[in-house]
Length: 173
Image 1 (cartoon, rainbow, N blue to C red):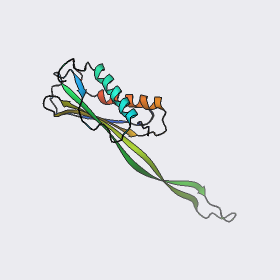
Image 2 (cartoon, helix red, strand yellow):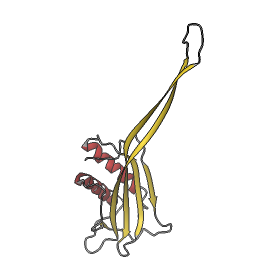
Image 3 (tube, rainbow, N blue to C red):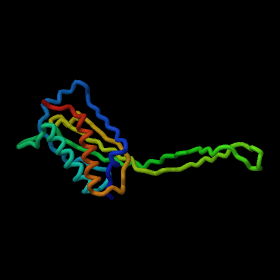
Image 4 (tube, rainbow, N blue to C red):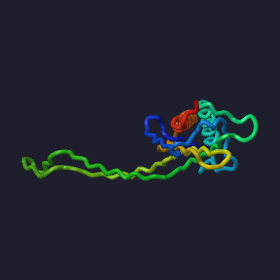
């Protein structure tokens, strides 16, 4: 099941959370959190795309894997998929109704209701202090899933979601 957050024309909601006043300057190295459930679905391709995008994003921020010993932060992620239904009712007005020639008998209107099913995807990236194992930062992206995207579109959307999430991560000097 190849999933990706939908194409760039759709909305993507980005959020972050951390304790105000947190000093992120000691954090310089990263590694993946051992034994952390990475995704709500078992899809190795999605896992590979997200991990590659996160590693690239962390390195763009000046973080590197440790050369020896424990990293300063551990990274974990979750991909949450939630089936949604959107009910849309539309009233349409066509104008005056002339049922008998020369006699106005009101207006003609119609109402239609559609139920649209879609999947809402939320990618959550967590950073944990390696020594305390406490969560120090969380970022997320939420958007509708495009289940018909090709592999290149999936890769681009995963990279965009991670880039936008990590774009909120406090930069290091």
